[in-house]
Image 1 (tube, rainbow, N blue to C red):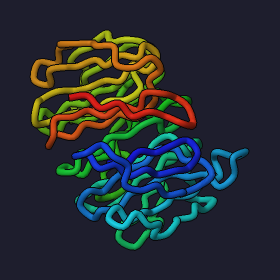
Image 2: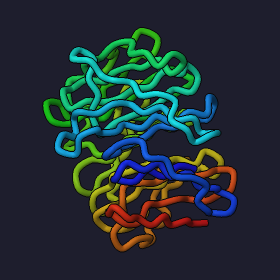
Image 3: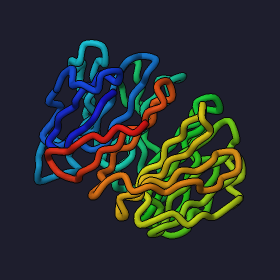
Image 4: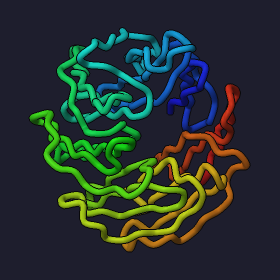
Length: 278
């Protein structure tokens, strides 16, 4: 498992023993990462200059050796920015959002930039349906909603309404549903194909991260402002628990279906603590 720190460190953790295996400095600052479990590569948006969070690049790390493979530099036409990043493990394409309403596509096999896509708003978060080759980008600013990218053509083929202030998004390919956190305490369930609103749930303050455990049919929403975790039954889309899990929850949330554990970055600080839940 990999944990990213604000000061540009990528920490590798053994999920069996919960011990640190290695630490790699990837940049001055680091913001978001995506892991390709098939190729074993980790993609991290990093900043070279602490005074300019938009002047960053994409660091490519070998997950087996923990070594930096290369960095991908943006261009004027194909920019990078902090906030949203994702990878399709089947096509090996990496998607990196930018402040200026763009998502830049990188070929993970060659580490070359392919093109940049206008999504009509600032990319806040993204979710990828690998089997259907669809990228769902939650956008804010100019347009609040969801832009749907066809991975085969790198074009926006649909746009869904997304309510006020999108914060996080996840897709459940098994049920063909999208989960969009928006506003201060709302989780909207959408149909993946047409964006139709299926259900609106009230969670707790500032839902910032969503992960899905397909084995247990559970959805977990990290409510950063409340320090709580909303637990949903993915079959009925009902909230079944909202325990307090952290006093000052950070922005990291991941589930390991193999060992049934949930990992949460508990503190928003340079020195953070990782909390492990069974």
